[in-house]
Image 1: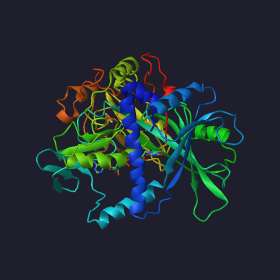
Image 2: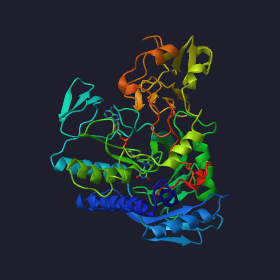
Image 3: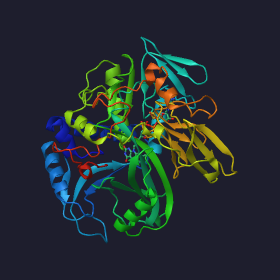
Image 4: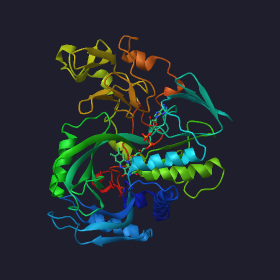
Length: 486
Ligand SMILES: Cc1cc2nc3c(=O)[nH]c(=O)nc-3n(C[C@H](O)[C@H](O)[C@H](O)COP(=O)(O)OP(=O)(O)OC[C@H]3O[C@@H](n4cnc5c(N)ncnc54)[C@H](O)[C@@H]3O)c2cc1C
Ligand code: FES
């Protein structure tokens, strides 16, 4: 779980917190069974997880968590007096036994072979443009063909083709990872994560045919997509990792990914509230999409077959979010992520100020242009208006992408969409004039209508996710207590 059970219990009560635990446990066991049944070779290992507090944090966070874990009947957890790492301050940690680690791509490949063996087909390189409801659902594709199906499940990470319903209940984050060589066996095999905000998560990956080194994977430094921090996230990760893990040598890999954080800590799995009876979705996976993906399998399977499922209500995408969440949003979101970018000047005054290999937003009259100057000095000019719901994209210098701060859509340097919910590219700059008036006075497509947030009533904004939720009814952020990853 990305959230600690103390937060889950606070929001949902002890019985539902127990149900959350059971659903995750069941997903983990199912992954293990799939691997065994399909004889997959995907480095699956049962191992312990260790949760520890940051340098200046109170260990009471762990005491509180342990008390809740005991209440919900969590099996195999104990407080250790010392984190099993060498060369770090002695500090207690919670040890979770019987966790698991595996190579996700090898596992997904194993699933693929299992599907094909049973007559299923996987089709790639086809973009879904639109979904039409009905007794038979029609899925329109970018190659002009339409696929008809009795049931459709949307697993596009951020759902496409819907209304605001889900997008007001989750927020997009970038998360960063570095992989560094460490001497083999110098760090006890385990999953490590801390209680900082943003928090850090650590795994060890053994290398094939290499007994000398293994790779230490260190992730974290998450931030809202489209709101770039001033610091370098990779550098921050490296300095944190060097502090905690002796033997850290050369960085071999670095990458980043997109995760969607549900505002009330639980994923969305079930009927898509934006469509009719026969369209389902799985989203809001947070940083635990492998377990949530598996859970989606057994929940959606029952829903589609009309069978009862003990977890379906808990993860229902149409669920009303809890009162504390709505309060939190009202108090904390205003002014943070809005459409105010229309009124601001551009990042630079003219393309002359953009260096090759960089991008910037330029104001041309009332219009905002996203300009990327390639290595040869050629300017690629696109509308800076996000095709999803008309946010203004920001240049992401670290990843050379255009990111939308409203719901997290991302586009490559020349404007091709790479992350939803946008489902089309940035328009060429000269395709039409876009002004503030054009954007908000034009009659919008009903599917694009900026609706009031169904939790706080504010318009045209995305709530912050559950990180930072008040857990004691107070409005002050207790965000450092909310982040976990197993
Ligand atoms: C750094 C990092 C560490 C993580 N660690 C863990 C972990 O330890 N444990 C864990 O359980 N999870 C972890 N996760 C989370 C997990 O990897 C993700 O949640 C999961 O991959 C999301 O899966 P998904 O299938 O929902 O989305 P994706 O993997 O994003 O797949 C969505 C697919 O939909 C396709 N698509 C999008 N739009 C369209 C369209 N219009 N038409 C057709 N196709 C479309 C995309 O091309 C893509 O293939 C981590 C994630 C990151 C980034
Ligand atoms: S992602 Fe929704 S407006 Fe850009």
